[in-house]
Length: 381
Length: 77
Image (cartoon, rainbow over all chains, first blue to last red; front, side, top):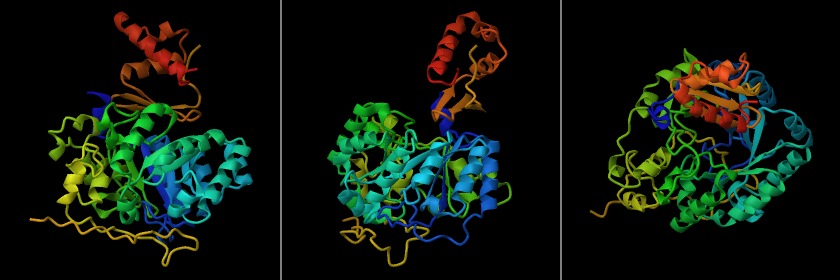
């Protein structure tokens, strides 16, 4: 059996585990995957979070990708980071930079087991702040400056690619180089509040090609979290695993301990269980019916006859689900154009399961240029 | 003598093993269970050839290549 077939059938423990520690956030980004803003009062306690880390150590999950919300606003954040690294669970955390001052940067620079990703969605304040809110560009650059000055090696600048920043890829790379950081590009998903801005922000077809060519040209110098495998149908595969890892090698633990198939699929349809249930996370990962289904061989459905199916594997499950497309058909951004055709006849997009957004927004928060209405797609027949 | 880097963690899998280097944050896959055995035997062996004794002669070149890739990527030191 080839390695990729083992991955499709699921491993005994995830390779890539994302853990959103809190839904609380100081920002209100328009495209937030987890619709974050307000803390959920049922959030895992410090003791419960440490019990999850113990379990990850037993399962030999090498590292967790911690996010949120803004994880650093949890008062026990550093305690949990120290606990994880002391238990052979490395930490990569995503932040908007709000708590990364000189002192924190020095502390981070002293650990080999902590990796930091600072989110930035524009190479200029104008483009970034339109999505992430006023002042967020300066905040991110301040954090990156502290990390560089403290001697932190190889921080990441994490960018969600949108219609407004695809033209800035070289500028992002130059910015990362100036901080001694590595650029990480990821795909915009129509998940959480991202559903509201998807039609306005997702890259246009010619920009997909521009992005693909740029990724091919930069190879392993740029990280992507393997999130652009739908672009592989343009030609040669991009570096990384070209498959959907949801429930197979990837999953998400949310702030209240709910386990979802992937970070982009926070919805009841993809809820596998909760870490608070008997058996904990390990039993959810190993025994959930949902994950068992995701680990079965997939047919390819409407994509099976397409000659590019082997390259793109039908694309991203979450992107299909949240745009109302069937899971066994083309991705909404299928580079062969089948997604656009499918969207014409698609059903209504599903309603989100949870919304933690700040009520009434935040001061300086981004204001969508067009209010989040999706066009009413009805079959003309 | 070559052996697993102290910052490398090994997770056995049905297909072989996952290796993770906490320093370089690189993940590697060992696609053969016997390669994992060899890697684990390095510690306590006097030479690479000593660790390869259980591997049939004609397969050893492939194993040597795999070991040198692991050395180049810092998994073995």
